Length: 160
Image (cartoon, rainbow, N blue to C red; front, side, top):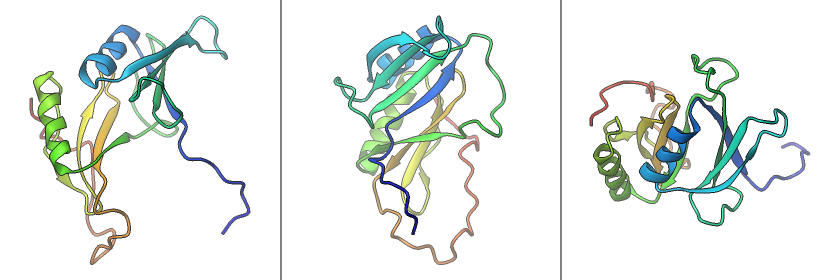
């Protein structure tokens, strides 16, 4: 155990996009999220910085933010995010999301059994991979042979 001070959990995640209009449309029209703040990158004035939230009030822990850098498209690697996951309550909701994403023309993986939860994967307009993951059975469930399954959220087989 460490003597580090406590945290309250994840506050927000900030990503980079190449086209803020496409990103706004993705979050609002496809994911049904809310644009709760439009500002600039305080470390790089003039660069748009938008905040999207799964709730209208944008409470900490519900936000994903983006800086717009039109020439920034690159290859994920060290120092970049591999993917991030949003939670859904159960497998029925996961299937509803999969159908919803497909109806909006989003390539989405089949439902994958990840031992601790079930999930689907898809990408935003810039290729950032998202995961929707169920709440259960949870991380207290143990595999018979821990680490024996290789998990690759980038494996293809997505469907529209």
